[in-house]
Image (cartoon, rainbow, N blue to C red; front, side):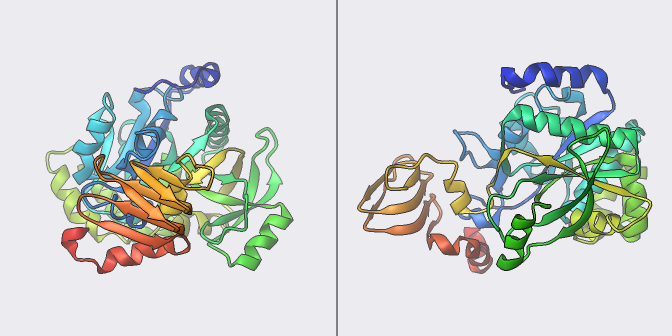
Length: 379
């Protein structure tokens, strides 16, 4: 589908020949309201062509080329985005796009994938990957994924998360605390606990300790092991997923999915599964440190980091002119529309055919709240 860098090709080619039961699913169901107005209901964040003219989903799919054959690659997303995604990822097998009738957070996206995989591959081990991050270099990502697969293949009761080396005491990310190393799977560690978005002081102490990583939101599970954990920690969701799985290969599949899926509890896989699993004696939760450059493109300031800066820190996507301005992020979706600033500092300006956003850089997180109050016609 998309060529990988030659440096990673030799390593990842071996993965294909040695492990036929490995799968990977990219979660692409987020709405990305913090990237409004470019991100809208009909075109979510992961489909915006912000990075070198390509979408975040395109880059996420590119990371899998050579790691796994197309027959073992999956995408879980909103059913309404099916045509958009298949157009963006020419050559992707449409039967491997798992369409959610409505968003029910990450727990149900992962559970639905596990249930679908178990229908045809009871021994499936699958990675859960994100569609809104930029990760380099490719060969380091590939080796970490290999380690995650190996951990679960050696013990089906294992659940693996990937930890990113913190670069600052961020309060917008979750953290994982590392325990003892796991022999034979270096540099993997046992996972002591998950901590969700600590305050600044606590985050600073985590960095100083050297025992904590950012929680990447990427995982590796055994399909059967995940569904067993779902039964224990989220029994109502497990019951609904069994009903969906029983109908998956039947003519009434769509009706069952549309009836049952919206009734499932809306909750993240971290809260529902990973946190209780880390305290459960029957499950071994592991963390593989991922020493990569990792950018969570979750708001306009982060999106600006994907753009080249001029000598005054201004970053632009589309036509722009800045006079005596510094640290301005300007985005114009209209090739015939120029964004011009004079004497502006630490500002975000985003222009689209239907709306224009102007926001101080230190308040980009509030764009999500703004999205909630504008009329539906502008969303």
